[in-house]
Each structure stands twice: as structure tokens, then as C-alpha cells.
Image 1 (tube, rainbow, N blue to C red):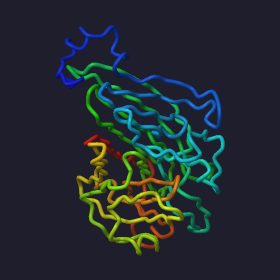
Image 2 (cartoon, rainbow, N blue to C red):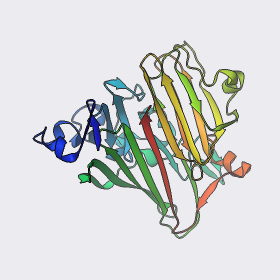
Image 3 (tube, rainbow, N blue to C red):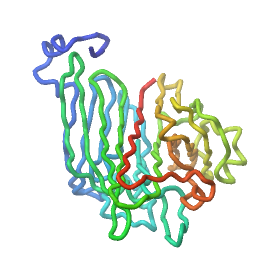
Image 4 (spheres, rainbow, N blue to C red):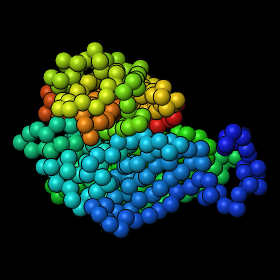
Length: 334
């Protein structure tokens, strides 16, 4: 049963009040017609209770824009939404929209490095992979109206890896929660390194001076020198600063992991929840610069220091030939 505009309503009570449910909730498939996003597919989703977001099938079903009651949740970088046609592995940041989710992986992510003689760029290829078998569905399940968006992306090369990521995004009418489920499969006949980080990018006005970060993950260490110098303030959000150096922190996740940001001026926050058994870490990216003003709360199965560091530290994960891994997270207004 959905709570809409202060009323708890059953399916029959909702249908008495609308000609078509799309007037209050649903998903629309669109295509961009200008600028660097031209030709890209988009799916705009609204849940009828203030939550709306945009899914990009040509960017691994990642989520760019997201808002709650008109207030933006996600940080959009100065590149804006941009087609994967412009992707250059050596210059990832020129194609980094940021948004609510940028997926990093699948065989490597984090800092550029050389691992076993292979030169690896920043954050991997999967976020610039176009999805196929994309579908949008709306269905009543008892008194719940469920919106589902699904698609599959492939990362493959001749003589190398062959991995797929099938992502299913669901949201219910009246429930301010986005559920994201990924099934990653190693379709090759060789064992493959497996690295995955959800680059979750939160921006203004949710990120603003006085907002606070909290998590049930255990703080382990800073990842860079700027983080080491400011570790005591890692959970605080300051005003934008000129010349700010990004700070990165590393946490160990419990089984039922969560991290969130709360903004008392807005009267709400956003919580990211996930399974710490499949994503055993959290990376916090704190960037309080001018125009680069963003907090990243990033579930991961690795550190963001690059594959060679993960291999040498013994935390690099693998997928055996034919193995699948199911990984889920959710976003909830609190």
C-alpha cells in the first residue's frame, strides 16, 4: 500500500483518483538530441512521492540526475551527461559525469597502474559500456506499484576478459527508496580479476556546510596524504574552498553496511545500504573544492589504490570461469 500526499492508499483507491498511473509515477524512455549526450538513451523515473532519477542505458545503466522534492541529490561534474563515444581510457575524467552512480570496474578500478605488464587506466571501462536487452516494466504486485528498469552491459576483448553486468533497478510507488541489483558473470574460460566500486557522488544542496556523514563501517586508514592530514574531519562537510586537495578514506564494512549524509537545513538525508559480505569495504571521497564540491560514499570490493596495490595487499578478488556474483545496494531518503 502506497503513502501518497499524506494518505495511505490501496491499488483500488489510487486507480479511482487517476486516469493513468503515469500521471503520478512511472518510467519514460527518451533520447538526447543535442550536445555531448546526443544520441544517448535515457530513462526518467519518478515514484510519486518526490523521488526522481535518470538511468543511462548507454552508460552501464548508471544513474546520473537524482532529486527529492525538487532538491538535487547527485553531483553532476562540469562534463555533464556525455556519450561513451567520447571515452578515452587514458583520460577518464573528461568522460566522468559523476551522477548518483558511476560504476567502476570490472577487472580493475581505482588509480592508474601497471599490473603484470598491463597498463591500466583510472576506474575501468564498464561505466562507458552500452547496455543491451534494456527493458522497462510497470506492474501491480498486490497493492504495490513496482517500476523496474533492467539492462546488460558487456566488458570483453579478444584474447582477454569476457564479463557481463546485468543491472536491475526497482522503485515502488510512494516509497522513497531505489534498489539496485547487479549480477556479474565471468563468461570466459579463465579466472579473472574482479574489482567493483560504486562511485556514488552526492552534491549540493544535500552536500553543504554543516551536513554530516555517518556510517557503521569501521574506519581503517586514509588512502592519500591529504586524507592523512585531515582524518579527524573526515565526517564533516565544510564550505567550498579554493585549491582544496581531494581526501580519500578507507573503511571495513560489516555485513549490513550503510553510510549516509544528513542535512538539517533540508530536513532529510540519504542513506546508502549494501551487503558487506559481497562489498566488504567503503571508500569515502571528500572533495570540498570550488565547482568540484562532492562527497563520495562508495561501496567496494577493493581499495581505490589500483589493481597492483590490491594484488600485493592480498585483497584482490577473482571470478572463476562461469562464476556469477550478485551485488546489491539501495538508496533511501531518511
